[in-house]
Amino acid sequence: MTLPLFERYPGTAALPVAGIAILPTPLEPLAVEGITPGEGGLWVKRDDLTNLAYGGNKVRKLDFLLGTALAEERRTVITFGAYGSNHALATAVHARALGIEPHVVLSPQAPTAYASATLLAHVALETHLHLVDGWEGMREAVRVRQRLTARDGVEPLVVPMGGTNALGATGYVNAALEVGDGFGAVYVASGTLGTAVGLAVGFAAAGMLTRVVGVRVTPTEIANEGVARSLATETVGLLRSLDPAFPEVGYEDLNLELRHDFFEPGYAVPTLGTEVTVAVAAEAGLTLETTYTGKAMEALRADADMDALPEGGVLFWDTYHSGPKPAPGPVDSLPGRLQEYIAECDRLFGPVPEVYETEGGAV
Image (cartoon, rainbow, N blue to C red; front, side, top):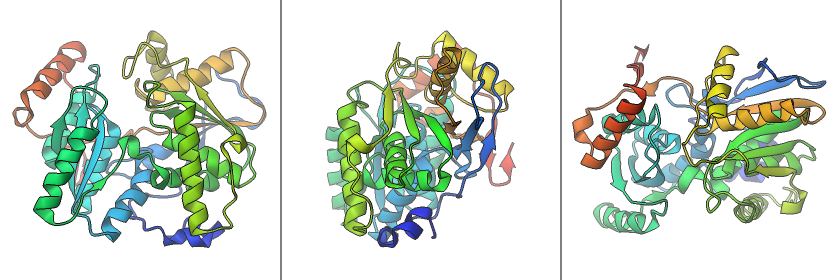
């Protein structure tokens, strides 16, 4: 596979990729009510289209992560996420398509409108779900890894929450090079920081001044400046180990701003401002949700209201899979705790519309 990263730094082409990402994703002008950018305009990077079966920003990360799993002949993959995690579902979808058995350690979250569809999709995919009570699932993952290693004779690939490590972030170093120069700022939802840090490293390595505004949507113990610094250091270290020509970019060289003012009242808990923003985006033809992308767009709209947008073009990075969910399985195949959770989601938001992805398309 030919990627801008591989072309510019040929040594990095030693990294295996699974070939699941449809790249480059479209870059389109965007008109959103209330946002009047300066010269350069408002644009959207359509990473909702990274894969037709299941897109979103996780696909760029999983291309490298699952590519490694294939190269190392792993039979299983273990990852982490909340009940409605797009990352967990994306991992399951693409692992199954590649013949890799998916296991997910799931943490509780507040009910949302589409979390139930995500869980039912796991049923159809026969994802092995392992439930924990909090955000820390590593102890459970160790138990699962030991059992699968004994069964298969080879360790599973453990993919961190959000697909965020140096290998996963490399997908967004490449994405920055794909976009190139010409934008004053990029606004992006930041859960585990892999997308924001990868973009910031890529822009800095290419000598671009683009500012990455990462809008935090997870608790501070998951997304903070210390985590960002460590991830940037590890990502640059990985790429320089493969190609010494990759610039020795330090954290201080990154034009990265982490925004913490749109997280509360908590993960997956929408505010009125988020809900209004999602509705306004829908009028502009952009499908967002209230956990990640809605909050990132809310930050962009707030800056526009205060006339605080930077000079040059402004790019909104759409990280959400906006297409249909994969087909559902039966709810009674889920553990009782998750059946109760789905019932609560349906009580609060009504049943999810029965629009799913099939072999022939949406039905």
